[in-house]
Image 1: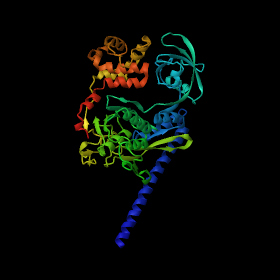
Image 2: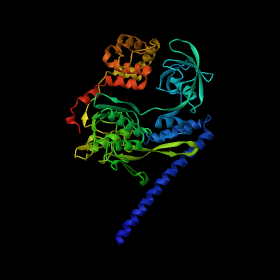
Image 3: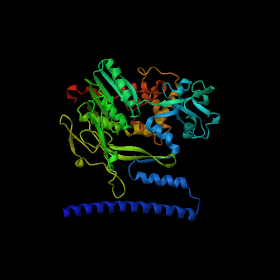
Image 4: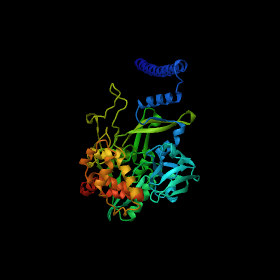
Length: 497
């Protein structure tokens, strides 16, 4: 008993010493930082840019932890809400402003948006917003002037794209919500397809409605496309798992440093996808909530995961209020799939001497098992049950897309064509015309020699169709050219889970 008492006392003293040491270090650095700021304020040769210094210091401090822990000051709250919820008050259009002294160009109006209802179309040019010239304003400043409370009006002076008439257009702002279920339709008599781009509030309800609609049309097989879906709300991911597995099943668990961040999330509803064969498509852009859903369905042997390995984000963020209206999005836990896997691919706590981080090597991953005993591994995203590689394109294609050459060509095309055939009929085949346009924007036009029509046509077709018929029709064009999807559907269902 004496030895046990001494051991307990030693542990208690060690914990207390550690806590005091940690608190001392924190207090020490706060004191040093305050002393530096005071000395700079007193001695520095120029007036201190305090706001810029404080933001730079905060951002640098948080970036040393992980990319997901960030500070959101009060003035950025609306943009943050837009990023998290895809909701804002405005006219519902993507704008493009190539020159600060030029006009604002309507790049892509959203379907059924206030902009479309008021008659704005792609390539219309906005000369002024509420009487203020757009010349001299950057795109961010123009965007802020267009946003506002739903129900309020914003007045534009507009040069119409094709007639070149100058007209006055008043647009009544609305609450703009960009849907996460961007496309749901039947691919054939028994195969349904749903493309989901995010996990914002209400998406589980939207997905459930889409599944019911497609089942009523005869769906027996569901292709659930999460490619490029970077995630979102954990609650929505749990409710989506509920659509496929029995009520009360563990969907995901989270474990943090403090017990208040430890949770086990179970499905809350009875499934509605009973009897459906399910294929989930993923890739390197599928992250976070996408990995929760695909990981759970894989662990329960409820779906066949196809595509390429997912991103590997197994970290959970929480929003904490800060003084003066700010917020801290902070990583509070790691999440684990039902089999016990954490899919986090990078250990941000362990860094090389230069501060860089590395992916967890396969040799340090662990084996887990699905409900039927199939082996699955942790430490680097969700590995598909059936690997289907993405098509490979020459580097010039990525250069043309990321360098906005394709976007600028598409806008030039729209200016020259008031109408195009329907999405089903439209085909782009003017490779020479595209190369001629692109050559004026590239430092080395010779790189275009390796570009072939099959490399760039699917991208241009989709982008052009979106400008005339909106995102939904653009997805249809994308599916028409989707080699990975076609390969997945060619896998015999006898090989599915």
